[in-house]
Length: 174
Image (cartoon, rainbow, N blue to C red; front, side, top):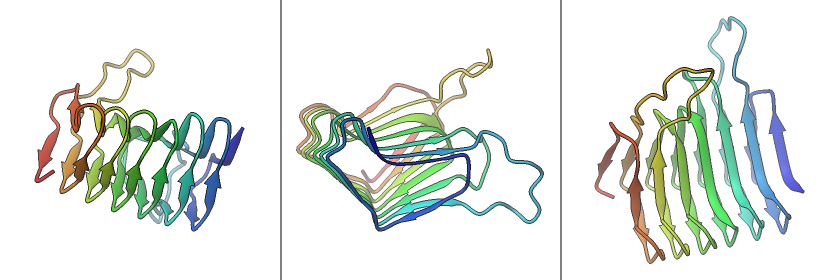
């Protein structure tokens, strides 16, 4: 079961508690295509949620649209899940989240052109932050990662603090 599932639109998901689910706590899918949008489409935001004690993944964000404005994941607390957070796709900005005490990895990024800034990632049983590029879609070669990690605090995890498996990423002051 999934605590909160949002798919097919642009969302503002704030101040929810998603806990004790057998699969995912909070799962957000942003559409892969948006019709000609004038004025510009606003950014999907996921903020100030508490996600805990979910068996598989606490917070899963899939952003299939490889263009701005993307998704903002901000000021969430994600703790004691299987994997803390998993970000898939492109243009996901995660900032000021606390991701701690998860059984697996803290944050998994399988994406391109994403930013992780000022997150606190601690006490996870495996890797603190693991970064790889977005997967191949429709035979198109995977782009380089081009993800940026900036000013994250990553400590006391069971595996590597930060593990990067794709090219063209940057890590500063983490």
